[in-house]
Image 1 (cartoon, chains in turn red, brown):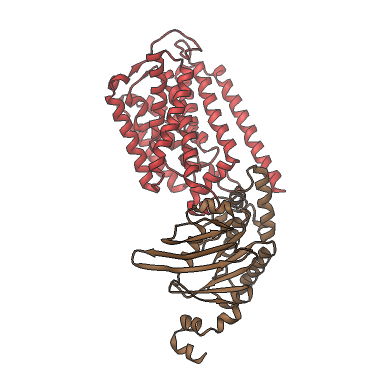
Image 2 (tube, chains in turn cyan, yellow):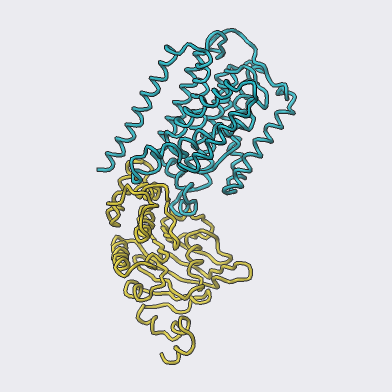
Length: 328
Length: 243
């Protein structure tokens, strides 16, 4: 019976994820090079971020190119709470998530009435406005940014100078969390509603789906997870300014892995990040002196090639037949 | 017993165009009612008003003893109004079963139950063998059937069918007719817009003819097709004289 197939497929996904996570958890035993560790951390982080972006833009179909806003809000909330009020980053992380989710819903209220390109443009503009506000907000450090005071290695304050391993494990947890949330939502009322909204809002509405609420839910979950990623990143780099946590490149780097791997799929973001992020970091490393241009050329070329040859992403190479559906 | 659906003096204007003027119809429980009329008669507009896609300019709509005039489409679906679309609106990137699950989730919040309900509906509508096919891979007749299946999964009291039989081959249309009868036999009331008179007339218990936004004639199908006003609306003055 097909229900068994379905349950088996979901179990299989879960097992593959567990195995991959375990393999990933063991890599620091073999990889001692700090540069490579750094690349692994960023890869895991962007996999998690892209997975979160995918919830709103892939599953629910509301393409956002402004998620840098939530990333930056997560980073700023955490560090402002820490430097100004001494709130531990763990609570700051949670607060950043909640703030971002609320702002995402506040913005969704007017903007979810827009469709297609108009929505995308609105997300870009809003993120740029956020960037400008932080540039000029004296209390939050304005263009100077915030340097996170070093208080010695500690899990409590989530800062480590001598080793990168704790960051690595946190990034792994973040990635697994975002994946698991997606996996769980995929077979839930929300998951079905989101896909219905993406494919045909009018039909969804006629089947009892409140389209507006569905989009709001997706935006909140997506923004929350991305903000947690932003908090992590702030702790990881221990210095933030508007450009370095809210710049447009973050919006792109969240969208691209999912698009490359397969937008609106469970495995797409992870696959895309595993290819794209090491490639970015390596090109930047190799062509270090010649500015940031080369990695952008690499992106551009990749996007053009993928959208021409495999519009549904790399994952579509693996789907056994058309009949198994686009979501695997 | 009160009617399941009633429109009371419903008007719909789009700018200067009057699509529905003072339309009052009622549909009783367990009936199959046909809504017919020439192109531009206002059938689709009336349908959208009943389904809640837009509120009427004037007048009220009552469903199951409740004024639903200002309820949005999603809430009307929860109250028991199911519909199909004239131009099919399948969820193209989802499989057939997933399409139907979306509908089933209205009354089944637990996924396993929604899935079971969806399978049940696929069996009922004869789509079960195609359950795991992407909706975009269905042939047109199957897509029409999927529209009906999805709407049925919401367990409606009233099913609005918007030209589900139009554009099908005669064989496909006959299967469609059989399906509509089967739906009615499960206790669902059906209101259908249809163009193809020779298919609809034997199927419906009652026909309502709209012309130029107004109710022209209403009655038994056999009476309606002989009514000079109906013939005039469809074919013009000359033919009405001979009738």
